[in-house]
View 1 (tube, rainbow, N blue to C red):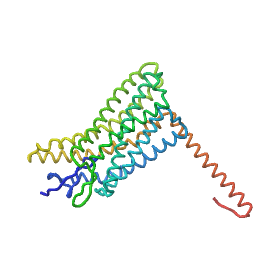
View 2: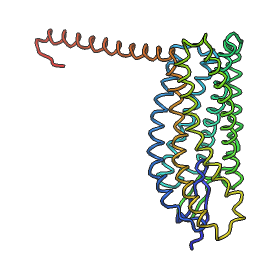
View 3: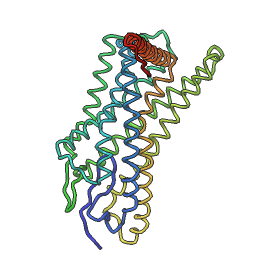
View 4: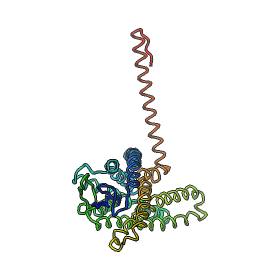
Length: 351
C-alpha cells in the first residue's frame, strides 16, 4: 500500500496526494469527476455573474438614488458577488490541472477575497431580509426610509465584519508541496474545521432569519387587506426560500459531515476502513454536486433580489429601449450619410 502525505484543500475539503489515495481509500474517480465538471460550471457561473451584477451596478448608478438603504444593500450585494466571482477563475483552473501554480502570496490573497465575498453576501442577505420584514410589518418605521448616514454605517459594518471573518485565512492558508505538485490548502485540520464550522454558523444564522422573517411576512400577507398583492409576493418569497435552502442546505450538510472524520480519525480501526472509504467517496461526489448549486448564488442574486422587482425591470426596459433607439438613430444617420455620398459621387453603394 502506498503511503503518501495528504492535503486538505481549502473550500473543497478534497484530498490531494501523489496517487489520489489516502489511507488506502482510492478517490481517483471522485476527484476526476470534480476536475471535469467544476471548471466548466465555475466558468459558466462567472460569465453570468459578471453580466448580471455589472448590469445591476449600471442601472443603480444611472437611475437610482444610491443614498437609500435599500439601494445600498443592492449595491453592496452586487459588489460582494463580484468579489466572490473573482476567485472562480483561479479555482476553475486549479481543479482543471489539480495543482496551484500561482504562488503562495496569490494563494492567500485569492482565498481572502473569495472568503470576504462569501461572508459579505451572507451578511447582506440577513440584513436585506430584516429590512424587508420591517418594511412589511412596520411600513412607517424610520428604518424603511433610512438613507445617508444609515447607509454608510450599514456598508461599513458589512465590510468590516466580512474582513474580520475572512482574516484567519492569512494564518491558516499555505501552499504545500508534494513530490509532483503544489496545493493551496489549509495547513492544519484546525484551520479546515474553522473554515467549515464558520460557514455552517453563517448558514444557521441566515436560515433562522429567513425562516422567522418570511414566515411572519407570509402571515401578514394572508390577511384580507393584502390579498391584492399576495399571490405575486408569496411566490417570490417561496422562490427565494427554496433557492436558498436547496442551494446552501446540502452544501453545508456535506461539508459538516466531511469534517467529522478529521475530529475522530484517531478512533478508526482497520475493520471500518472499507465502510469509511465508501462513505468518503459518496461524500466527495455529494460535495462536488452540492457546491455547484451553492456557488451559483452569485449569478442568481441579481435575478431574485433585483430584476424580479417592478422598479428595476422598468429601468432595464428603459435602458434597453434607449440602447435600441440610439442604435437605430446611428444606423439611420449612417445610412443618410452614405446615401448623400453615393448621390454626390454618382455611384451606387450597397449596405
